[in-house]
Amino acid sequence: MSRPVRFNIHPTETKIANAISVAEAPEGYAGEGFFSARLSDVVGLARKNSLWPLPFATSCCGIEFMATMASHYDLARFGAERVGFSPRQCDLLMVMGTISKKMGPVVRQVYLQMAEPRWVIAMGACASSGGIFDTYSVLQGIDQIIPVDVYIPGCPPRPEAVLDGFMKVQELVGQESIRRRNSEQYKALMNSYGIE
Ligand code: SF4
Image 1 (cartoon, rainbow, N blue to C red):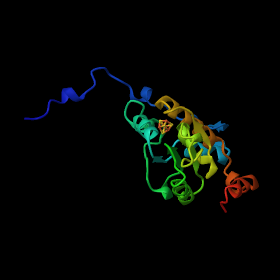
Image 2 (image 1 turned 120 degrees about the vertical axis):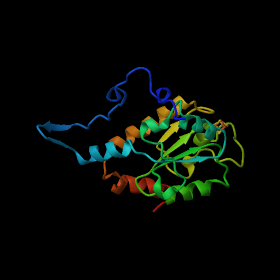
Image 3 (image 1 turned 90 degrees about the horizontal axis):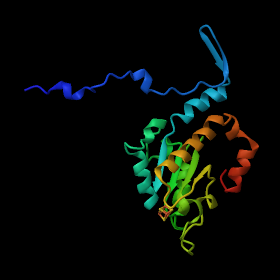
């Protein structure tokens, strides 16, 4: 017996074109059959809508991130559904959870294995500042070992806060000049962390 296909069809007619949000084009000049814009803006537009996160989850905040990835909040809407555990292919390190001093070198090694350009989110109080664990064994914020672009407050942050932090990173990525990673300031930042 064949499957009743009427159950697979949405009862109200929807126009897919109305349900898709299109990324805004960067500032530039448009005319009949042409569009010109700054290369940095076009690269930024592509990068910010195709971030590949690497979730480095060690505790409760990781569970909140799972909720953010799931269907209700759906991080895929931001072009970031390709969560990976291979540092060489990801460009957004999301550190979520308590990072002990023993774990610090591992976080740092993962960061170093990521190719440029790379960005970092510290999600939750623990990753940002050690949180409630003001003890001898816990790192008091991952910015002691790697540079952080966005901090998400909360213990744990709600998925809305995670999405907000993600959108802040998208803003940074979209506005970043393609020359930034070769600049003296960036090299000085890396040197301050002992990274060549
Ligand atoms: S910030 Fe709070 S919820 Fe997140 S890992 Fe630390 S203790 Fe857990």
